[in-house]
Image 1 (cartoon, one colour):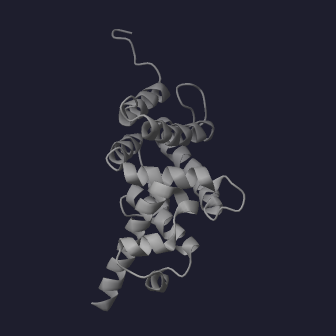
Image 2: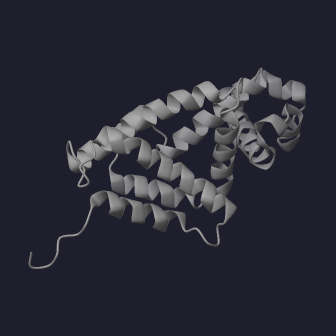
Image 3: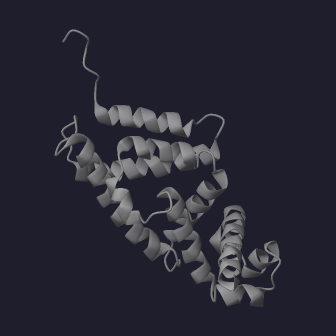
Length: 195
């Protein structure tokens, strides 16, 4: 019972941190603000997360868990392109999560940012996963002639780039439709009837 309450409280803290980071970015977010949102003192929050960096890692890991349906990123290697399409659709329903991720991603490129290592490793893994997804769909060559390894960084770039565009102009950027258009581009021209 105590363990379940502790896990529930940790989850509340992570969700509050997601909100605060989405609003203020990582550098602008304070442990005191996160603690206040869940009805704790800053000292009480430190019982669950001893440093701001530990809380940041928990936020990033939680986002990845949501993206992989509760599984690990390693399990994502068995995905198909249509599941990636569904993930983009799902992300469009949770702008706060996308905003938090995008804010942290943008900040992480600065020297010494605590999320820099996480994102560097994550993108290495994502490129491998996307290459596996593309290989499962197309084999060793896409219709364009690119290898899965050549196209994998493009798939990740389009996905994350669409998130930034959608956050900046949600009324004019349809993220799921744009991602589906990119998948159509990857798949190449449809066969002409009677050809």
